[in-house]
Length: 157
Picture 1 (cartoon, one colour):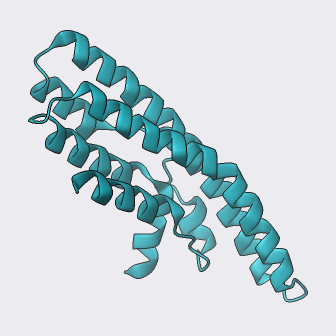
Picture 2 (cartoon, rainbow, N blue to C red; picture 1 turned 135 degrees about the vertical axis):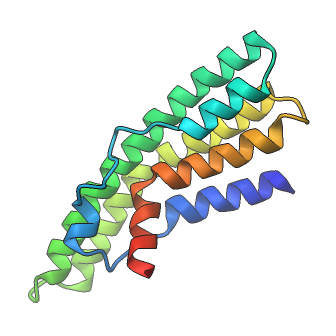
């Protein structure tokens, strides 16, 4: 059940398209871009996983997840800016916007799957006792380091 919640959370965080992004929200100074640091996840692994071999394997997986999320962030920043420009142009049609959304989706689908695969690989290295803390820290780290997630929450407030 916890795994289903984790998948749903990743999907929610990474799949929701925010069509009404302001230019500032899409490219503001607070954007993380490719500089992803999953600090909470690293701390949980260091404090909760006593086996050095498994902890090292998990930290390596965190590095991979950071790279994938960073690439997702970069694509998000690029396409949200592009979407904002086209949507502000009165002469552009819905077809123009849909084309951008299809391109955007194509750029992130594989990376979202690899990010999910990283979560599952971590589960394979964690014990049943360690897993709840690791999976929670993974989801928190994704939320904290996702420009898309942050952009959605900025537009809701």
